Image (tube, rainbow, N blue to C red; front, side, top):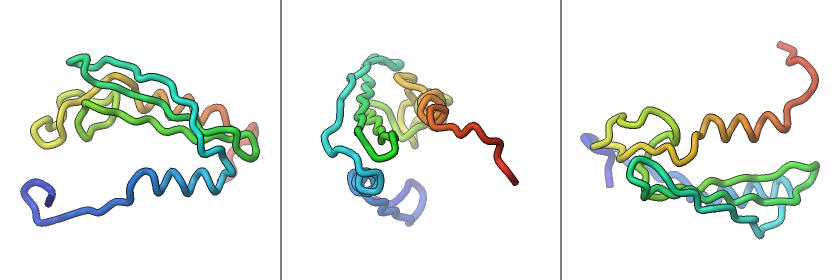
Amino acid sequence: PAFPLTDTRAFPPPVERSLGKWLAHNGCSRQPEITGPLAGGPRAAHRATLYRYRPCRGGVEVLLWKLSGAGHVWPGGRRDYLPLLLGEGTDVIDANEEMWRFFSRFARNQPASW
């Protein structure tokens, strides 16, 4: 369906297609280690399951968090932001913390050159 109050439609690729490209690019196992689901959120009906793909070339890994029960929102962000349009917010995970936890493990010890 179109976005509310517009005639605009978006057709993003399925997450599995993008995930497959990252797995192939990094030479990762296609069988994930699954953690969770974690439960929580404002109504305790929100779930977050972590899919960790490894081993991969160069010691990297690919992670996918799958969330259910929440709206189309930033996990751990502002909770009541346009709930009629986006759905219910969630704090079952904090996307900012999860991204920092992931990327900080792969930081280089060299300062960035601009």
